[in-house]
Length: 200
Image (cartoon, rainbow, N blue to C red; front, side, top):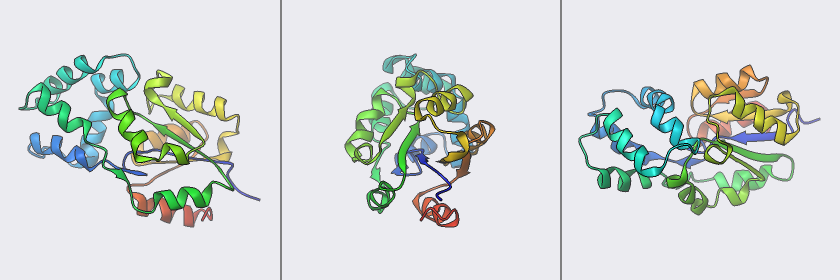
């Protein structure tokens, strides 16, 4: 018997290459490591408001430039930020097609109106049965409410759901909801974790 019914993936840094984020680290003179930056980003009031659909694009960009003390103008940030998503990691499409006959595939992603079309253009959503998207849900990870909404819509016991995310704070929140959650950074760790769990 399979241990899980549903596999839920974060997108950026798990299935999608978001190496465009390096630009903001460069502007900040690499003041922090990538994990440290992501923790600041997740906790940013502007990011949380924008990715939960409660702030418009214009206000978000202005607030981010101020909050992160970026030495750039509005258009420079917008152009760079719009290009953060570089596409699916090599092998993602093949993996999802391999898993799909046996598992319901979902994603739970903090994203926004600026990035969503870029996400769709990668083709990854076409390979996922049930997308859960923060700006449409009005909630963001790691708030418990977003996991509760997801579980209610999946109509599955939490222990039948596997969740893979590259941020420990999101993994901890999912675990607190009873979900089987693991931190994975990059697609190689995704595959390795699925092998260790006998999913692959």
